[in-house]
Amino acid sequence: TATLRSLADARGIYFGCAVDNDEITNSSLAALAGTQCGLTTPGNAMKWFATEPTQGVFSYTLANEILAFATANNMKVRGHTLVWYSQLAPWVTDGVWTNETLTAVMVNHITNVVGYFKGKVIHWDVVNEAFNDDGTFRNTTFYQHIGEAYIPIAFNAARAADPDVKLFINDYNLEYDAKATAMANLVTKLRAQGVPIDGIGSQGHLVVGSLPSTVASNLALLASTGVEVAITELDIRAPTPISATDLAQQAADYTTVVNACLAVSSCVGIETWGISDAFSWIPSVFSGYGDALPYDADFQPKAAREAIAAALA
Ligand code: G3I
Image 1 (cartoon, helix red, strand yellow):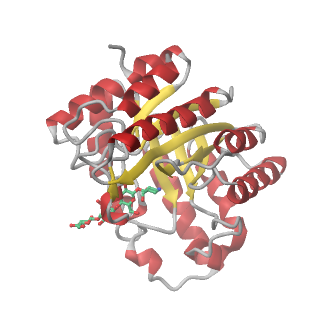
Image 2 (cartoon, rainbow, N blue to C red):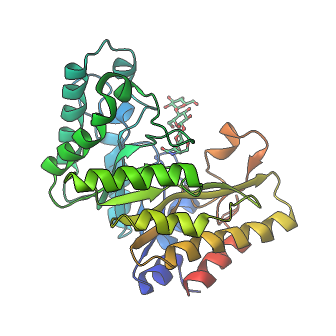
């Protein structure tokens, strides 16, 4: 059977899956991800807490483990993420900042991390989860001290550090009108100002049987801003253990998302947040939910995997 990565390649897009450091040491997971996924994203290893745990002290050990895995399997890599309110280092979260000092800290972080991975990643999620669900700006450490300007400052710093990597803004619930409209408006405004934004990532953390009717229309809205779009963190969770009914519905829901990407010429790829239900963030955050990925916990393909393949074929 054709692999998901080869089917995606034939359509001119990528199929990817995120992996984490404790996952690639599992030989079953590593073999599956390496075979099926043409691109990967470190689930945690490039986040601020990992890359700059102490101010001015940069650590790339964990990230380099993922890069070595990607290289060994001929996979591209998305960098994730430079400026996010979560999984910051405590010195950032707990620091006493002014606009000027936090701007300097943010720019220094971006300059070092993007510079280090220059030529090794194809995308950066420069800014992650900047919006509330109602489309207002999330009141993060960066927003509090720098205001909305933290976003263009971050993108300009990333571009200065690597002129070639594609720079993305990434968020969840972009299937819904309020956040998708706010994102499209922001990207349109910033691009008119010359801010170097190349893409919008739609994470795609969804629930079986509960996809809004606007999945495709809002991906098209994001693409109408003129930048690339990508599905960056797709998973579709169900009450566990997943029922036969939900396995079929999940396959239909994966089809909906894959088709939404295929319908937009500037959609560059689809990535799931993990590949096997053996490793997923869902059960620890959404109690009673899981089984969200294309392969089951025994690394066997689910109906969702066959649905992705069929949609890509
Ligand atoms: O590093 C500590 C370790 O020292 C400790 O022993 C262990 C005990 O639980 O926790 C470890 O930290 C965990 C961290 O991942 C690194 O592995 C946290 O508990 C855990 O909550 C954290 O979860 C990550 C989550 O982001 C945090 O919000 C998930 O693995 C990661 O998949 C998830 O990814 C995010 C994307 O970055 C952004 N979009 C949403 C997505 C899902 O939350």
